[in-house]
Length: 136
Image 1 (cartoon, helix red, strand yellow):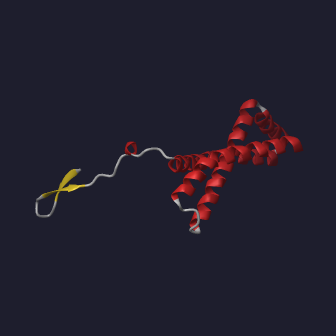
Image 2 (tube, helix red, strand yellow):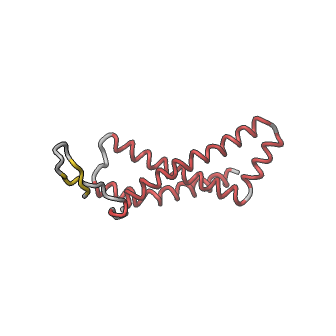
Image 3 (cartoon, one colour):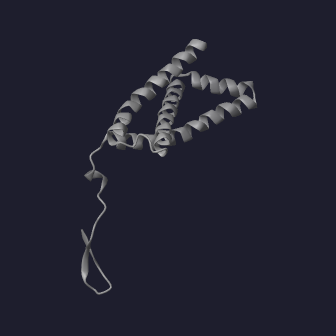
């Protein structure tokens, strides 16, 4: 605690907010952090989607350049990561939407959801890519 002086001049202790190092990392905290990170990743990934759309509107040469990039190993890894970020963020958003109705606020339920969410987001991402390659 720190001390501050009141209007009478007497020092009184003031509580401090605990630092992050005080808290133990729990699944819901980790998913909250990852939700924010995936939101930021989606912001930058959307620039790539815009690049693809602008290239498609610009002409065949620009479109082929973008398709070439997305066809490389690095491009596919970026697209895979973008797909995962989208699925993970979507699941987190659906969880928050459900909780906004007042459902699923119990501690054991939120912890279970936080543990399951990464596995479901990875499974959905793989499913989307398998379907994409099958249709291709």
